[in-house]
Length: 228
Ligand code: ATP
Image (cartoon, rainbow, N blue to C red):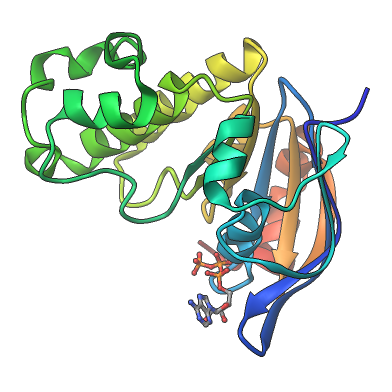
C-alpha cells in the first residue's frame, strides 16, 4: 500500500535562495516520523512545502499514491492538518470558537484535552502557552485528519505539558493518524516517535528508527544537533 505521504528529491526555498536540497521522506498511517536538526537546518521549510504553503522547486510529492501539488487549503481537504510554529490559534477568539473554526466539531475537539473544559469561553490570548498549544493540537486533531504535520509542538512549554501534548499525539497515531513532527529537542519527541530523520543544512544526514536514534543520541547530538 502507498504511504500517506511520500516526498522524493524535494527541493525548496524562498525566492532564489534554495534551503532544502533533495529530501526523501515518507509517512505511513499510524506512524510518527520526527524530523530533527539544528536551528536553520530547513525543517520548517520542509514542512511548509509538504503542506502546500511553499511551492517546491523540484522533486515529487505524493499523497496516498497520487501526485499532490495543491495549495494549503486543498491539502487540508485531503486530510492534512498543519500546526505551524507560530500563530496556530486565533488569540481573540474563545477556545470554543477556535475549535469550531478549525475542526467544525468543537465538542469532540475539546474532548482531546479534558483540561480545556474550564476554559472554553475564554479568549485564547488569555491562556498559558501550554494551554494555547493544547488548543491548537485539539483543533488539528478535531478535524480528524489523516496526517498531522506539526512544527515544534514543544516550543517554550514546560516538560510536563510537552509530555501531555506529545502523549496525546501518540494516542492519535495508535488510532491510525500519520504524524510528521519537527522538533529541535530530540529526547521527548523520540520517546513517542517510530522513526527519526536528522536534517543539517537542508539535507537528511541520518535516518533510522526512533529506537536507534535514542540508542545513539549522544553521538547524534555531538555530530549534528549540538547540545540543545
Ligand atoms: P528553526 O528551528 O530555527 O525554525 P529550521 O530547521 O526549521 O530551524 P527553517 O526555518 O526551515 O529552519 O530555515 C531554514 C533557512 O531558511 C534559514 O537559513 C532561514 O534563515 C531561511 N528562511 C526561513 N524562512 C525564510 C523566509 N521567509 N525567507 C527567506 N529565508 C527564510
